Structures are given as structure tokens and as C-alpha cells.
Amino acid sequence: MSISKDAWVVFFAAMVGAFAVASVTFADINSSSITVSVDNSGSITSSTTASASTGGNIATGSTGGAGGAGGDVTVSGAGDFNNGGATAGNGGAGGNAGDGGFVETGGASSTASSSNTLNDTEIDLELASTTANINSSSITATSTSGGAIVSDTRARARTGGNTATGSTGGVGALGGTVEVTGAGSNNNGGATGGTGGPGGTAGVGGTVFTGAAVSTATSTNLMNRIRIKIFF
Image 1 (spheres, rainbow, N blue to C red):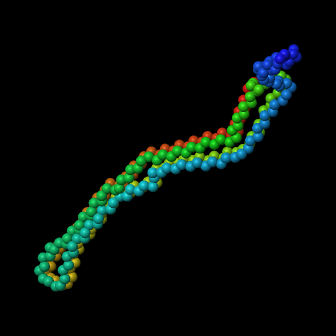
Image 2: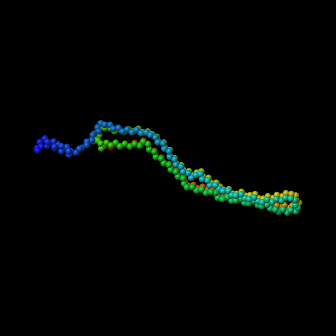
Image 3: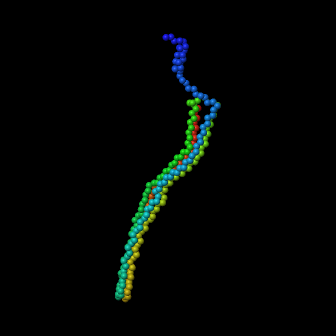
């Protein structure tokens, strides 16, 4: 079998095409305009509250008991040559008041923190890996952003509203009385009433001891932040 000259030419051309390496050619950007437009809007309403309290504590004092009343002397009817000399009983002493209550609390601590972000935009424009050359071209980036952030952050710590009252001593009682009724002669009398009892002493009043009150509030708001990166 013989192969003609034309057949060999066709075979050689086919082999060259089979082993040829394909190449990619990037197109140039010439006299062009690239526009990036960003339009954002929105709103955020945030309310953050923290509260701590050790207040409202009450330590009351005590009250001493009242003293007992002294005995009375009563004489009735007629009599002669009465030397008297009777003595009524003394009043009892009032009771002493004990110490008031004691309240001790730990510290009050409150922390409130809020972080709000609105319309955060990031744009990457990659041209270096997709084009061969950029000539007489312009890139324009415009941004229109609007919005509102309403943030209310509150922290409150309280140790107030505490009450410590004093103690009250007991009341002393009245002494006894002497009462004589009826007629008599040569009555020397000499009867005496009893003395009133002393009042009791007051104890130590109530005591309230509270820890420290610490309040911390932080608020971070970020709105309409735009980052545009252009790579040539």
C-alpha cells in the first residue's frame, strides 16, 4: 500500500493540532467606565436594662417591758389611837430593751451592654486576574446610605432605702397609794405611799450594713460603614 504526498501533509497537520497547548488571552479594558453603586437604608431600635439592689432592708429596735404597779394600802372604818405607819408597796422596775436587729448585705452590681450595627457593606473589585491591561478607563464608586439607630442602655445599682430604728426602754410602774376612810381620834397617821419603779434601759438600736453598689453601662453603635477594595 502506498501513501501519497498529500496524505502525509494531512497526517502531519493533525498531529501538530493534537499536541498544541491551548492558551488563554485576557481582553484589555480600554476607554471603559466601571460604576459601583451602594444604596442602604434601615433602622434599629435597641433597649438594654440591668438593675441590682440591696436596699429596702429594715432593722428594728426592741421595747422593754413595763414595770408592775406597787401595792396599795386602804384603811376604812373608825378607830382610836391609830399610830399608822403603813407603807404601800413600791412599783416594779421597767424591763430593759434588748439590742436591735442587724442586717448585712453583699454588694449590688449591674452591667448593661449593647452593640448595634446597621448598613455594613464590603465590596471587593478584582481586575488584576481577569484583564491584561486597563487603559483610559474610569472606576466610580457611589454610596447612598440612610438609617437611624435608637439605643437606650441603662444600668442601675442601689443600696438605699434601708431603715434602722432605735430601742425603747420599759416604762416604770407607779408606786402604791395609801387611802384612809372613816372617823377616828388620836390618829398619828404616818402611812406612806410606795415609790414608782425605775424605767428600763434602752438597748442598742438596729444596724444595717450594705456592700458597695457598682453600675456599668456600655453602648456601641456602628452605622453606614462601607469598604470598597479595588485590585489592579
